[in-house]
Image (tube, rainbow, N blue to C red; front, side, top):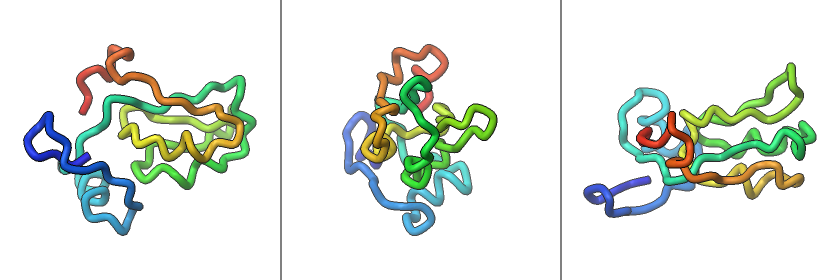
Length: 109
């Protein structure tokens, strides 16, 4: 998310990697150009059927496929909470949860 002086949002980025220079700067160079949202994605392994249709939606490299579990896997430390993976999942196995509800992520912006 772009800010005009936190906590004021300037815009929410739904661009794609590598075309978006803001995402590329954040992901490739570790420069905090974008701020993470108040939510993170979470996979319900009981609902996930391993179709992997969600994988291509994550522009922040947080979503991958676990070959051992044959399920989608989300690295919540990489997740920006954009929700694009949620809209792609045909099984409704991905949801957004409050970042603050996860102690390890509560202050990871």
